[in-house]
Length: 340
Image 1 (cartoon, rainbow, N blue to C red):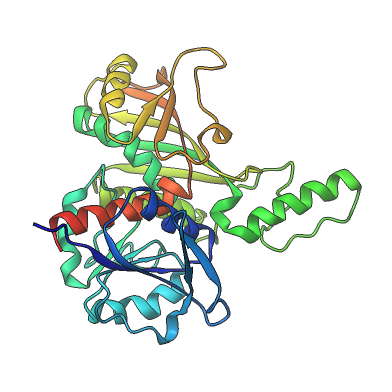
Image 2 (cartoon, rainbow, N blue to C red):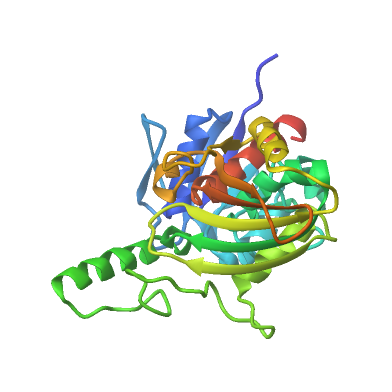
């Protein structure tokens, strides 16, 4: 029997995550019959690469007819998704959306394939599946096997998030500010609320009424929706002067006892996780080392000496790959294999 292939659209194809999606679709040999790159009117006609041998012309999202398109992988901003995703879904195309717009919609599954792949089945309500926030994805890939073993009750997380999480313009701002410091030029702030070069900023997204930022709120509510509504979560999300890959210092409390050694053993067997953990300079992973990698890396696993049944760990992952593009493609792979 011939293997089924799918007509796939990529919305936001000219952006950083869009480029990664196209690259990962080709690298993982996703069964495509045709790939349609879509973007704004301004980018229509531009060319993007798909694999080593294919150059594709970008089409305009606003005028594209989704009828006959099987899957759409989207990373073009919440307002754009709010506008086009329902239209695509009604035309019979399943949208895997990488923005925040649909994540907390009760009729839209929020999926990490290593954590809750069965949730994909709920896509039929609206033909939309949501990709979680990048920092939530890497944390929960690492915590799921530990939750299964000892039941997590509370998570305290501080993130160290790279500028690529804010898009190409944010990365450019880090570069130009860094250069400006060295040549004694005036520093321009356009993307970030404060200087990002040689600095850290404890604000990602807008502040909410309770004093948390929206990025911190996302980690709280998404963890509850994906892993367990009973888990208590508090987050402090920080932007750091790094181009690529997010890092997290995570402290976890469990209902049942679990040692650092037990956690290490479980994580070494966990899908999508690589453990690099011994007490020396080459025994932990940093953001630079995981750029371009697919896995979630876990280091510095140790028992929290301040609480009963507590562990602390360091989690690092490429936010453009596992935190966005790869997770979306993995959802598409499960969808194509088991549902379409």
